[in-house]
Amino acid sequence: VPDCPDSMDGVVWDQNVFERYIFGVYNKTTITTYVYTKYHIDGTKVTKISTTKLPAETIPILMYSGEVTLGMAGGKLLEITLTSHEDVGNIVENRKIIEILENQIKCRRFTQAWATCEMLNDKDYWMKLGKSALANLDIEMAIRVYRHVEEVSMVWSLQKLEFVEELALLS
Image 1: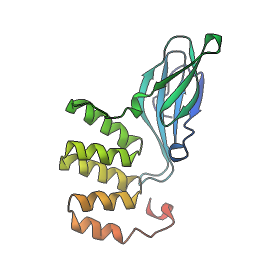
Image 2: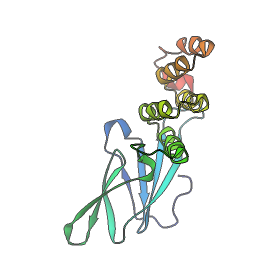
Image 3: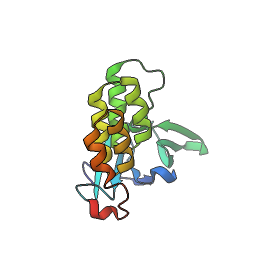
């Protein structure tokens, strides 16, 4: 696990069926989000996404879609959203939207990244999404992105790989 915190109190895995490859390593002050990638062009790997500060005297109990439920003294519960899973919502500052897009791509949340790219409406960000989808062997999403930016030759090439069932052959 890259850049693992020096002191580690535990690990919590995301319970969302579609995000079970995301986990957090926590200690008393922070939780660091990682993504485990089984099929990637570089082979199996773990990538650090971001670090989120935890409120004092809390312990992560459950993570679901980047929402972490924390246990507090007296049996109280508190929910926080990890910085890796922030949503664009009503944010208008371009720099912050780009930061959120970067995290969406790192977390392999390509559907959310698609919506963010639509907001930014910049070919460079579309290409970044397409390259990441391709690197993560999400051929269907890569085709969708390259079709959107009208990269016909890339779409034709990817369509030849679309029905390869054994992803290990592509990595």
